[in-house]
Image (cartoon, rainbow, N blue to C red; front, side):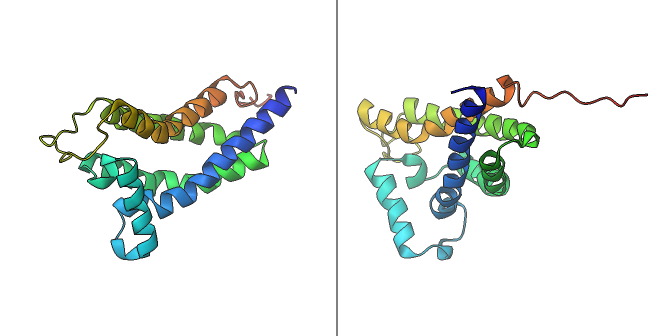
Length: 176
């Protein structure tokens, strides 16, 4: 498989990532910041089940800083998802480079405090999380494994945009 095949394969993977992110954001993540009435009871129960089953303290009792990340997801990322999906499925859209770099850096930046909280926070009763959260190291790793792809895929996207000769185009100069 040549460079073109790798680029197309990675483009399709990224297109699927962005396409799948639309329902995840709309149906689950944004329940934290949008009015409760927008969601049927089944979706609210699904989020409650996930938060309890995976002991996700960020979705059980979302801190203000986490809500701010979800607000950014609503305002900045959600409109970008279908645009990025289109660009990567279509292929050959060099204009996606700058927006993809901005998206990937923004997303990775928000995942650093999320992953750090999940790995290092004291979730005892005395903490701000009221005892909700992973109790064992295995539970922490399970929860981190849910969030980690949202750091790793943007990292892969960033490296792809920065390193791929296809996306490193030079500005054409006018001939005099």
